[in-house]
Length: 117
Image (cartoon, rainbow, N blue to C red; front, side, top):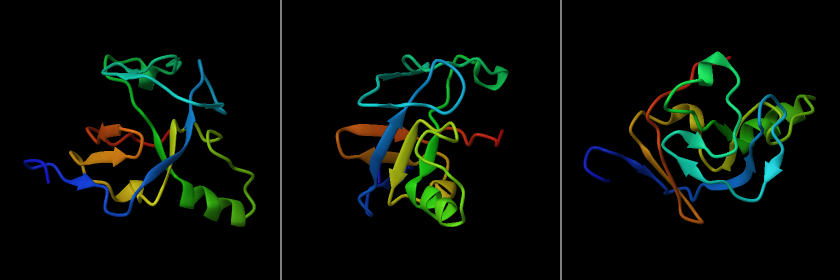
């Protein structure tokens, strides 16, 4: 715990894929990204929902993609527009204010839940 903030690292979540694009989807895989308060450097924000001073970093459960593939959907990391595909983390259950710590020094705070497009 960090003050009133909850840290989610007990299940050893990790990033399986980093994906960015100048605009649109699918988002190709990249080896690394640089994140500032304004969002991911190099990430296109051509949709009006993303043209704000504070840009979203979108998370997707690897397990959810696996389940959708078993149902016959040809999905892969980046195909639905996410930036980070994560394993061992139920993204839809993360409360506002929680701190995410991943191997490799990646630390993110859930400051807003994005509405579905």
